Length: 576
Ligand code: DGT
Ligand code: CA
Ligand code: CA
Ligand code: ZN
Figure (spheres, rainbow, N blue to C red):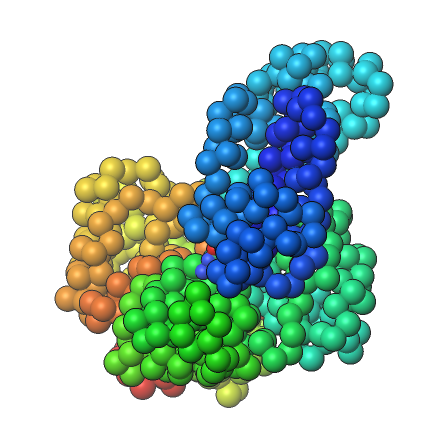
């Protein structure tokens, strides 16, 4: 366990003791002091324990016999029986309340003992009754903040999406780099692995002046509140509603620390196990020859490549580090060469003002060309739904004429005449075959009847894929991140049918969709189904593939697995 993790356990104990009304104030204070010590010590106490046992722990400032024993238990097992025992004495809802922004142990104690509050529901009722506001030290504003805190907590149960978090994290990294106090500043954690949702931001830096770096970090304009700050680690709560951790390490161990804090935890566990089998210990402080119990020689720490090399692995891209076969692939030198944003050469799903886009076909084509694309398919909606505009049987001639016009006006980019056709509830398509026949590129997707049963939904999609005019099944699970769940369907059956019918599946790069998911992309690749990474742009600013490419990389996709990495006519057939 890291010092920070042990500090968290101790902080929780001191809070709980305070709420319970621990009679011995020294006891509470002992935990507070130990927490502060742990947060401000760069040397791992677990290492101290491994090297010198409980004795060595007792010699640390602020750590007595009792706490030394508890640290030893945490280092050995990762858990603490004593904390479990204390927690049992509280109603579970009260532990949740304690974590609401603006409520510390003192307020929790009042709520519990004076008002018998046992849950968030109780707390809301009490706040509405007006009784809380009359208490000394609470007041209207405090109560309003608590109510707000409850809402935030509810949101926080869902994590934030990567597109909200990454630009902000990059600003923070830039601000730290500007100080010139750091040799390295890097994003770590799930954000470096480009997960679609982020629990908290992890930033790793090296500096010989950590105090100064921490000061800059804690006073950034993005910060709402400083949770704790020390020489090696600070945690702040950002205004967008997420924590950011900054860790500062010695420049010499940057690679090892970056490897450790990038995770995932399961990936690290796997890599460490290989080390152990070879008599090597891997930690955030470096790779050491010998077991953890004996002090070995440092054999690598500067770069991640070095760290992986010591255990016979080639460098593993962060997006792959989920312990989903990447370690085995690295051993066999069979890692994929992941797709990059530069590989995207065309876009096969975007909209103009013929349906719900905001720009004309000409404007969209120009913007696509500006964005460096060699071809696009304009795929306006064809849907029976409320949408007034869009492609119908009776205006297809006009639609094709407009596309022809755009081809004439915008040189240097190929424009395909496409459509995004609704898959109706029974799997029929909204446009008849003789209309589809006139198009270069047919996208189908689900925009209604999302709640069908798994078997009905699967049959519906298979039927659509069997239509000979269809080329691509767009945003296949129809999810909207944080708002609409995935439809229920048998994805394996769909992928197998797509393979059989020679159809493509989309990875929709729009940040609110990111559909297909990483796991489904990986499965598609295994089954030999090619993926199209499209923007689904509805405006001239929309030709953006960044988050889609991240997701593709997490799904192990290489350039050759993605359709629109080739020029027109390269790798897939047009009927131009
Ligand atoms: P998140 O924040 O929930 O989106 O996910 P992560 O992966 O960023 O997790 P986080 O912030 O708790 O920790 C950052 C990284 O630090 C994690 O990916 C791996 C490393 N790490 C943290 N705790 C442990 C641990 O107990 N053991 C190991 N091996 N690594 C850990
Ligand atoms: Ca994190
Ligand atoms: Ca973290
Ligand atoms: Zn669309």
